[in-house]
Amino acid sequence: MYGKAFAPEYQGALTTLSVNSSLTDVLAAGTEELRAAERTGRHGEAARSGLAVAEAHRRLGQIGEADRAWKASYRSARTAGDTAAMAWALWSGGTLARQRGAFALARRLLQLAADLGERGGDVVVRGYSLAGLAETGRIQGDYAAVTRLHEQLLAEARRRGEARHTVWALEGIAQIHRNTGSYDTAFALFEEAAEIAARAEDRRGHAWALRGLADIVSVRDGDIERALELLTEAEATCRQMKLSSALAYNHKMRGNVLYRAGRYTEARDLYTQALDEFRAMGEPRGEALSRLGLAKSRARLGRDHAETAAELAELAGTLERIGLRHAREMVARAQEELGTEAAR
Image (cartoon, rainbow, N blue to C red; front, side, top):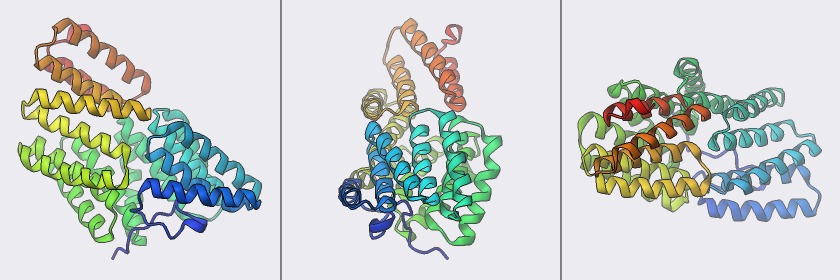
């Protein structure tokens, strides 16, 4: 049995915040508690309220503010001698680094966070940090290296009845299966994640699961309208909770669904919107995937072949430098689809 989802990154005076709290509300409450803790010299509380501030900024796509906040949280935790709080701050910093496409830094910070979490006796931050390492490898397309870790973390989360972490692990494993062509398995895992998230009132996890289901329904079944319905439901949650990154990925996926349906003008518009959103929050992976979709849509709408070839070649080089193996393979497939292989 799974209990109600909770947000362990909301700590200290902020434990009353819900996993579904609007990020703007989290930021306001966290900032207020942080300032109060700093005024009274409570370094441990400053570290823990600062963590919520860092995470709210990160999820809102405010990269510079998030970077400053997690570092300040770490300094306060170190001053307080709070090893677990130091681990949480490093987890936040590692997650931010992954979001920014700095994968080597992400792995370094997340491994440090896992080690400190173990030393500080905080199994939750250790689990979250190992999950971050697994997700980093998955995003880069290194499936062989991280599938076992995903499954290990799923087993641990199930054993402890942690709904939110179970949902995360199921969605990660589902994405690996989807990307390797096992659509039926992926669908079943996304479906289970959606059911657990709904029962546990984990609206963020539920929105991501709906996005995954929409992708499978579109690519496997060709059911465009059902896919768009699922994305519309997920988008409502993203807007209510101010989930900037999740909303941008929702728009990018809507572009994918429309492109597969041959609705290239609508797809172009969605990819353009998603690209602007990712650029505003400094998220290179989302930006690259949106650029890819936009290039394909424009090609289908009659863009000059040489311009398309040049853009795909440049995008391939960018993804090579970032280290996004799966996305690089997607560009290669687009080059083959559009007949621009010679420009690689």
